Image (cartoon, rainbow, N blue to C red; front, side, top):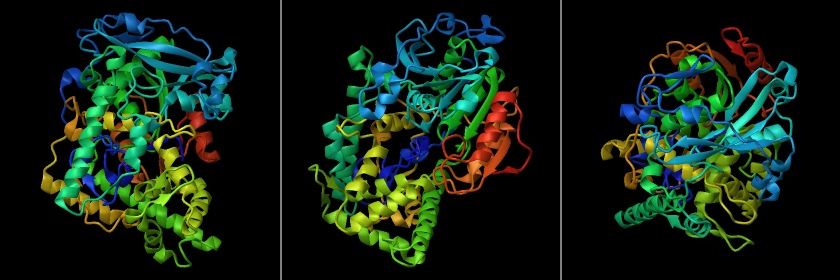
Length: 555
């Protein structure tokens, strides 16, 4: 799976990992960043309608303003050391690279109470290799919400995947509050509980089945409050209420100052574009350069976004099917027009009889569809998907389960990272929870119709999601009309991006008065790591020299 991702909900339930049979849509989740879309309405104190802090600006680092009351955070020195302690498995051995440096950044739990409790964000950097011509730092976020910026910076830094910009820019990633190696961490289930949840096939054909799905979701939400924060001496509800994108943008400005940069240079992929947009809204004059790739439109209607993402994955499935048929010996048959029906014939039997696996687990319908759309994020995943579906047709679900495990963050030892938990938590804070049940039912039906390959055959039903039971109230992001004082930044949008449809990038570029780069292809994001030399060259030239591409540029 592309590590830079805007998450698609397995079977559309916010409770990620529930083996939900129906193609259903949650009431609260349709307006949450669980779907990757911020919504309107907020309280000024928590959302950051003004720079963080309680009073007028007081001091500055270079020409960047330090909000009053936050001086001790902005002026902190990062104590850089080895990242080896993060290398807990073979999959994370790259952290042992001596070129990587790690540190902890301290930020307030609440920017309304900077003298109160604090939390810690993990930061990783790969220093610029050409120190004589060093420009500063470039901070990156891979999306999610809930993906680890430390991990992607570690991978890119240790393997030299961003060597052109890393010559003059320190390559820096951080784990947003609650994410990855930051503390406290957002955690909603134990590993055993997550495995058990995934093995449970939830149906929505009857009121009793819907009630059972709601009860499982309520249990998940209660687990989030119980497991997130208390072990670190922080109230779970207070912590869960602090993890929204508006606070992450404030944290990133503290990081900018701690790195010694007068202005921020930033790459945000997928949901990372939401962080970048919110940072630009709060701190426009602190921006040097910003690439927003695989954009989330901050003003898009949440229902339209949910439908658009489903349409995007159906388009990706159709593109995959056409390629599969063309290659020959395709497990979906010889006619691309019949691929959806052929795929359903493979996975729907799992509703009644999950497929036993060698490790003692079972492949459910939900895990099968999760493993499928995980491979649809990029054309590079198509050969693996073909192989996995061929094996499934022969009665072997091992490879499709491996794809689902990768998406859901389960490693070879059976331990889950907290990406999916953070995905839910951040969405519950960033989104509204005021969707009319009748409207939610209409959305469920539209989402199901938009992605028929994912449909189980059960009637689409609007079920509750974790946000309905959340321990903290939402703090929806503010809409963005324009951003005075923001330099022209670069938005990249891919024509057949399944997770963040092309038009969202067009809309964001218009909102920010940014330069738009169009990339032709069926991939989620384009800059760095996807093999698109055209997009890489344009992005590199912009970050290093502030040279933007021509209007209507295409790769």
